[in-house]
Length: 114
Length: 112
Image (cartoon, rainbow over all chains, first blue to last red; front, side, top):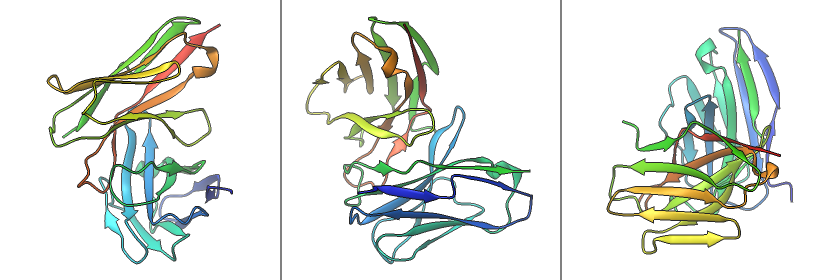
């Protein structure tokens, strides 16, 4: 089992460019999440998908869109990148929705916007 | 509004010492309190978690202490080892919530 995989690992964008971060899990989990991690800010939830076919905003959704392509895959899109979106992005999944379920994290994507 | 406050931001401990990280929350509806551990270049991973029906939970060298009246919980790492050097995040949630809310993280360095 690969667990949660993310691509790419690193990315440099110029302001205004767009890109999609890919995430896939092979644990047959129902729920998936996108977080960003910034120094001193912890992990902040961008969007989540409680189950296939549903998506909801988290704490910091502005500037992002998501797609739950199928049960395995959950992508995060930056339509017009800004320097404030420089961060490390983590995808996670859990067996069920709700805060009691353990979340399994991917290795992260380090994004720099110049 | 910050739902969970974590301290200290960084911590340096000698090998064999005790590491203590604290978290405080406001919302009494929270009833699930996990700690996640993150090594450099990796994603976080669940370390240990507690429900408020107990005041302490121990797994090996890691212990969560929970004070419901003070709305605080802490992670104690006994006999700290250099391999424990990592960033630790507390989190809070409730059964009705669909998500975890994480603290700001504590970077622990254990000196050999």
